[in-house]
Image (cartoon, rainbow, N blue to C red; front, side, top):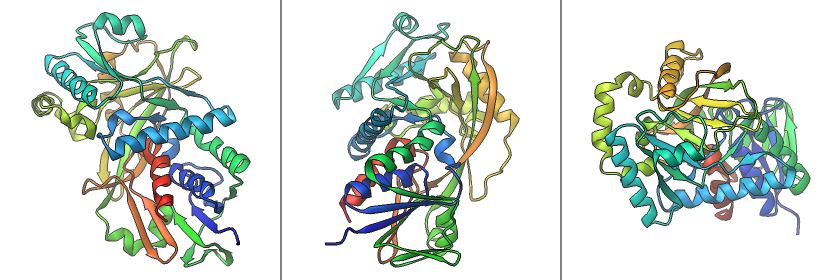
Length: 375
């Protein structure tokens, strides 16, 4: 029996996850990427694998499975990662109430979370501002990678361990059942998966236009401390993150908390700002972010948004000696109807995977395994 073949268009996180799952299913896989390396949203994020942000049930289980996949690959090729967990801080009574409600709800469903006092936080972790700190929620399921390094190295893993082939700097200009075209060059395969947003836009514009899909632009920054050996010990989130994640909606106090934020921090909510910090193996600190929605996001960064982020960062981190070394923005697709992904079959043997809404690092590997299992 001949080995089935597959082409994956796009070498971002969704494409790499799909290539992995297809290869494990027995397909001979080729990944085609229009750039010489991945340069999109997959390398422009915190590097957070973030199960705590996913609601209980299917999505949380998908996130946990993705985390296992990350560890398996990283251990195989010596890719750095840190099982840093996450820490959500409370500086106001309403934030502390929400955090206690989350602890109660998550504990009942078996999530590994704990309530930490101010003293416990300052003893265990570095850099947290203790002034007016009431406590925090710690979860140990979250994992950090350096996305720029990880997305560059995963193709090595796929090539070495799963015999996946890559064609870099090739733009797919047309697709039909059983084949893709790169200008006049044709490549055939039994299955074709389009996993890149730009390729989705150009190859299937009609299908894209019919979806309740928008784009989200986020602004981020990277800082360096004076001491490169200094470690936070976890990823840290300010109170604004409490109103950002779907899983946190189980807290009854969230409505009143959001009302206060709307009254006191309307500019933050207007630009979708919530502030988090992760740290890579070089000691660099990634800080963000904002959320601007629209079909054609402004390509330029707004300085006032970065300043809002930095001002809020100072309320929960001791960051006076942090030096700004990079700033950038990323854009990803997001469903406006609450769906967490898009899987379409526009033609026989052709599939589109998209719309993970900023959770690609957290959900892609689990999603890809589920998709391939259902073929």
